[in-house]
Length: 70
Image (tube, rainbow, N blue to C red; front, side):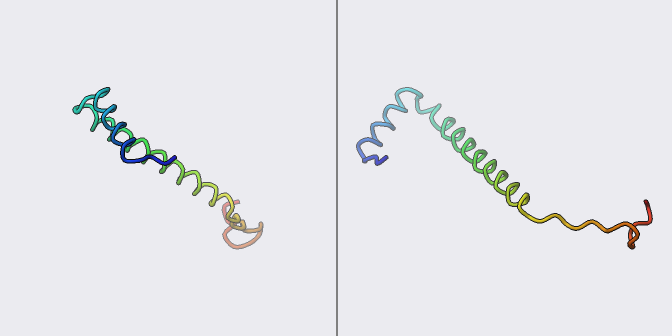
């Protein structure tokens, strides 16, 4: 999707007409927060996937040291 300078200017003018100059910064902040939250959620999902791929540590066998509580 390639946008030219004229198309971007038209979008800005339409946004100003629909939302007004006072509401536009609020919408920009809200969009930025939503994008930031989405990216952090994606990073969380990928870290969980990577953690699931790691091998599990071996448990001590019965009768070995460290098995005093059983």
